[in-house]
Length: 87
Image (cartoon, rainbow, N blue to C red):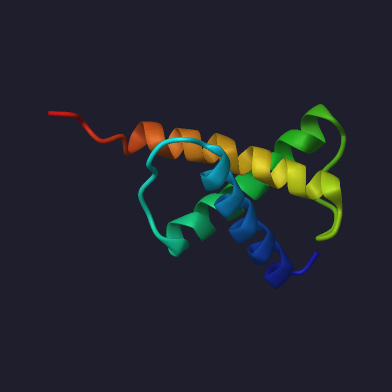
């Protein structure tokens, strides 16, 4: 998969993860892109370690599921680190 396809996969996976995860996450499209790409990398790594399946192609359902799952994990960590304090 090319770098442009991987960035597009990360952006869409990050946006889907923000839609799936309830709550208010800060950040605009740039944070979504970064979280999605990091999540896609994490999902591909975990998928290759656990299932023997990595991120192979843009139109592969397994690639999308791994990227979205990784983006969800990264989004939870991001929310915990940048959590807003209540007064």
